[in-house]
Length: 386
Image (tube, rainbow, N blue to C red; front, side, top):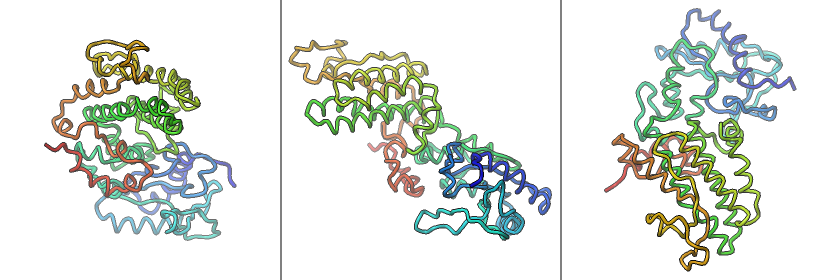
């Protein structure tokens, strides 16, 4: 096996040393853009030697002009098949047929002579966005379009690297670099709302003797906190395989990671609660640092105090008969209300409150969120009904 070269570096080398010379020789002056974007750990820069076992190798996406696209694509594809070397820096450029039993995965195969069945995807910019996301890349996106594009898809469009750009590919990518302000606020309010729904359950289930579900809820809280950190740092969160790797790149990681590990490593709630309190406090402090709203009290209090919260009674005495749920919570709903008060866009305000995006209300591993048609078909369901 050749020495491992990170896929993003290998892709750029492949373009500059192999693909571009072929284009210059056979199609002089042909406007094009070339990049590695889309699927794959190599696009994110997270590939390892293990990644080489499928859909990995000398590859890229080549964008051609819309005018006469089909004719030009066929010509370019055939020239690449005939003229690409069979190996590039020790790696085969030839890939087998898509495996119908494995989501169309293609695996590199060694051959001695061409033609080469390459992994140079030939696209045009509007067609690529329409095919991958059912999105018109030539116009600004609507509120509901933003909410029905999974974050993984947005990451695939905006990660990677552009190697050559005659056609304005970078400008299109910039349009999807982050959510519009009020959509971002809506997503953050929705994420805080998810935390608010379950923050008391980790203690309550333990109180009922349900250690298993108490641990399960704690794990879910950790996931919500991680996703909230991504939103606060304006970073798209990848799907689960790379979530922890990407989390390490956040500014808050060094402070947050030990607290989340503490939550998950404790065997029961009394030992877990101090770690939960520290994590809640830190995420609240990180939120206040954004200065989106007036600072919100970062302190936790027992869930029993919910019915005296508006009276500003911070805690009930431990022996108070009303103190039936003495589990420390942040009352995350306070952050929801404060954020929603900052939203001005009438279309965002007309959405179902706190529903969020498909990345928030669908499980990432389910077929629904992996179906572009299904996600985009939810647009009408996001509006509030009277």
